[in-house]
Each structure stands twice: as C-alpha cells, then as structure tokens.
Image 1 (cartoon, rainbow, N blue to C red):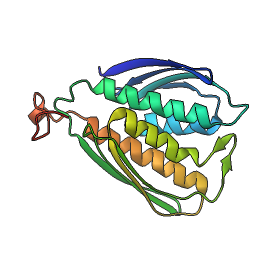
Image 2: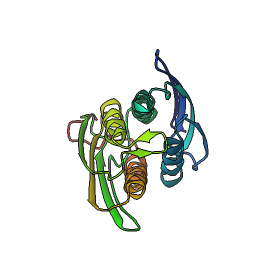
Image 3: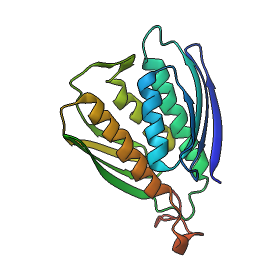
Length: 195
C-alpha cells in the first residue's frame, strides 16, 4: 500500500491528512468547507484513493488559508506516497463532460512542478468556498507533488459543474499516472533515470 499521513499546523489551519494511492475510494472528510468536502469525496471516488482529512481552519475569515493548505498537504501526500516512483505510468489524462461543461486534465509526475490553468467561474462563491481558490489549490498540489499539471476548461457555464469536472478529471488522470505498469515495475520511466 502506498499510503502517507501528514499534518500541518499553523496559526491559520490545523490539518491531518492520510492518502492511500492504492485504495478503493473510502473517505472520512471534514474540511470545514462544505464544497471542498464534496470535491474531495469525488476525487477519492473517481481516483479510487482512500482519503482521510480532519481540518480546522480560520473559515470565519474566508476559505483561502484552508483550501490552499489542503492543496499543500495533498501534494505532499502524493509525492511521499509515490516513493521512488518505480514502475508508475507517470503520465495521465482525462476529459470529463459534466452536463454543459467539458474539462480536460493532463499531468506528468515529472519532478518538475508547473501549472497551466485555463478555467473561468461565473459565480464567485459556492457556499463558503471562494471559487478563485480552485486555481490556488491546484497550484499548491502541483508545487508540492512536483507535478506538471495542465487543466483546461473547453467550455461550460455552471460554476459547480466546471469545478466538479476539474476535480473528477484530475482524479482519473492521477489514477492513470500512479498506476503500476507491470512490464516496468522495477524501472523509472525517464531517460534520465530519475523522476
């Protein structure tokens, strides 16, 4: 099992997260931000990751610190859970339709963090979640996991649908990338010999 647990404690957030990359989609999630609970549940289900999160953040201010720090921890759990990355497919991609919306995610567990994010959100707030934090969340994931990540909204009008399609496509692309290729189990998929 490629599983990792991390904690992050600051003056703004206290978070404990456990991610199992070889799970079945089991979740126990409390972020304090209802929309993020929903997105993490979708992420775990569609990626078949087991995910446990207990988070206490300064959501009386806004969701910024909580969402960004959740992204930091998820990125670190992905990186640490992968270990030396031997045998992984490395690349993953998925395009997800969500009613009127279509979103594509492509990623490379390259050891080089880079985010391309092309999406726009008609609504600024969903519950107590500021939608502009979606980009900040994935920037944190990319930076901390050392992942090249391209997220592109092809079209769509409904903010909830757009963000949901982003999380689903990310989960399914990541599942492909972290899956072990049995033909290369003891090999790092890089001409450099390291990822």
